[in-house]
Image: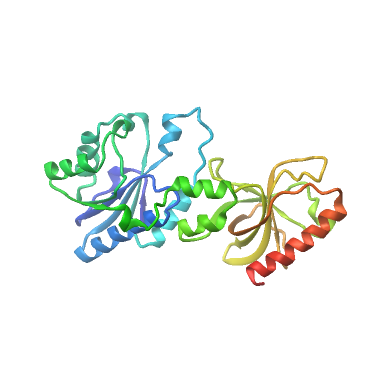
Amino acid sequence: MKVLHDIKDFNPSKPVWLTQGTFDGVHIGHQKILKQVISEAKNAGGLSVLLTFYPHPRLVLYPDNNELKLLTTIEEKAKFVGDLGLDYLIIMPFTKELSRLKSEEFVRDILVEKLKVSKLIIGYDHRFGRNREGGIKEMQLYAEAFGFNLEEISAQDIEQSIVSSTKIRNSLLNGNVEIAASYLGRSYCVNGTVEKGMQRGRTIGFPTANIRVNSSFKLVPKNGVYAVWVRLGKNKYAGMLNIGDNPTFENKNWSIEVYIFDFAEDIYGLEISVEFIKKSRGEIKFEGIKELTEQLKEDEKRIREILEV
């Protein structure tokens, strides 16, 4: 897959099968659309293309709203759509000027003139143009006017129960990582860099790797203890991860830290990825270190059973 950050670099020599949108999470609904684009383009000898935007439109339109949390960084999104077999990912900078384009201008100036769209495939709830004024009915009119084909994928075709990025976010914020995984079609993951923490875990036999998440807008699941798979380079390890304020200790600080089973390497400064499998318990304040240590032993036993290691 080729990734382009400037729409001017796209000069197609074949017919273009296109879909477009933010596609945050690249969930099973998004995957249905993308697979349709990829399949039809391949059968017709064309190119499969996703036009997406960065930064997320809400960050540009509402810069003072810092509560937005995303399911995927732009790098994660590129990986997930690339794994599906897409030919081109075009990441278009989202600006206030772009947001002011009327729906007809967006279709004419970008989809038709710049991307040379032959067929556009979009979901039933797709919105576009200034103030999200355009919908499927408007797009049908533009398709006829500008001479490209349009296909709508209905809610029934996309999924039996409506999947949305909002539903997935809410599941993760409630700690329901298994439900989120069923919507995503894969385990939810968080990527970051290993950095030094308070180093209290090693004093009680549970040395942990503190994770600094790469993006401040990346959604982190609800506080608690989770069974996770840890990826370091090409290697995969089982582990238990804690998200929270460490209430048992006097010097409380929110952190994400993972205890990797049967592992004793120095990994400070390395990139790490964790895949959330199941929440084991919520955050608990213990009376002291002894009680905490006993609970961690129970946590490890339970999580080894969950991960079957």
